[in-house]
Amino acid sequence: MSITEIFGNLFTFEDYGELVGLLANSLIAAALLGVVGGLISVFVMARDIPFAVHGVSELSFAGAAFALLIGFDVVAGSIVGSIVAALIIGVGGAKASEKNAIIGVLMPFGLGLAILFLALYDGRAANKFGLLTGQIVAITPSQILTLIICALAVLVVLVIVWRPLLFSSLDPEVARAKGVPVSLLTIVFMLTLGLAVALSVQVVGVLLVLALLITPAAAATQLSASPVWVPVLSVIFAVTASVGGILIALGSPVVPISPFVTTISFLIYVVCRLVGGRRMKSLHRRRAARAAKDHNTSQPATP
Image 1 (cartoon, one colour):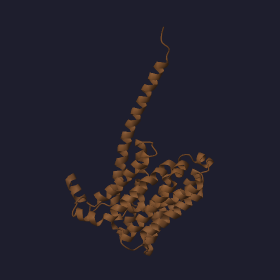
Image 2 (cartoon, helix red, strand yellow; image 1 turned 60 degrees about the vertical axis):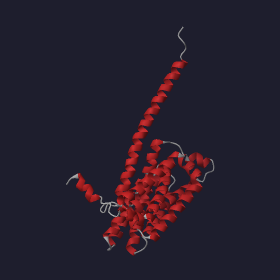
Image 3 (cartoon, rainbow, N blue to C red; image 1 turned 90 degrees about the vertical axis):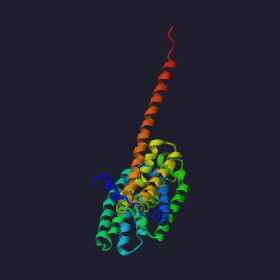
Image 4 (spheres, one colour; image 1 turned 90 degrees about the horizontal axis):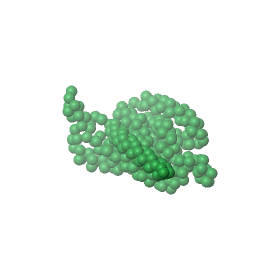
């Protein structure tokens, strides 16, 4: 089979304009989720807790699978599972090693529960698969509304606690000495992270949620260290991946959303990594040239 035939089977773009119009609400929700994911990923990278994202996503998966089993709203089940996991991680230990141990225990437990619930579910296989690969184009208007409300709630909380949360994320010891409520902010952040994970699961599925909650900020930090530009670039990258992935997926009758979202996110990171590498080499050359110039200037003149 030729490459042309392969792409012909993957992409048709039939009635593409009508599909975009019908899924306008889904695209708006995806854009909001991109904003949430881009901002949350800044703190995930600052706190160095990508492992926590995966841990929360496993219990989010279990909550969604249980909701599917009992005929409850899947989005609500995913949110409940995420919040429970976030609270356990947030209050479970102050040290990074303690949190990692808790996450390591939660991950297999959540995954095992999810597999059990899905095994007991005798409905459509597509519903099970959607939990793993994302299903924002198939969710109901009420679920879209829930996603939008939760996304706005996360954004409001981040706006309120942004400065102290960033301070406590970058240097918790100094922040605690300055009177910043580091422990309380940790719990608040974990709750917002839990909501963000639950929302992102609807776009890329439980297995690939890292693409919206880690990769955007990881790419942004390759280009800048500015506390202003890193969040801005991270949001741009996350929105591009989430919305762009859906727009491409609408033209494919066989491939789910998540591969497109994760591929766009990965390509953004690769480009940023290459640009950042050249930028750092150029910076090092300028510093070396400046140091050599200063050294030659400071040398006494030969009589």
